Length: 92
Image (cartoon, rainbow, N blue to C red; front, side, top):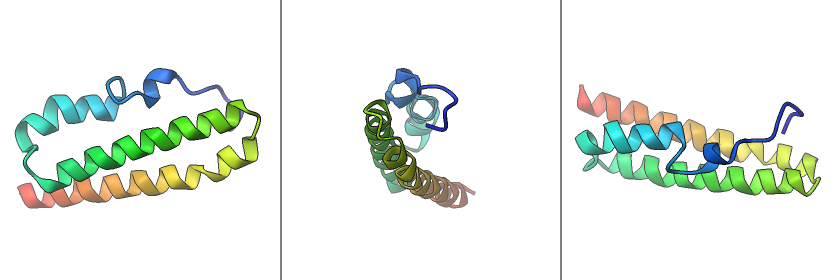
């Protein structure tokens, strides 16, 4: 959205997203019963949906609207980071 290149579709797909893969392959099998993991999954899904919406805005040439929406993605990423920290503290 900053004129570098268009986002790859895989990046916005839950199954192909690196964070989604890490959750599925590493975190859920070991810690899937923790509420933080479910919250992280929910936030990741929201973040990916927001990303798809923003890419669609950008592709419709609504560039400023798409850029303005990046704050939502940043907020969701910060929430995921906070939850990962909480999970880490719980597991120590």
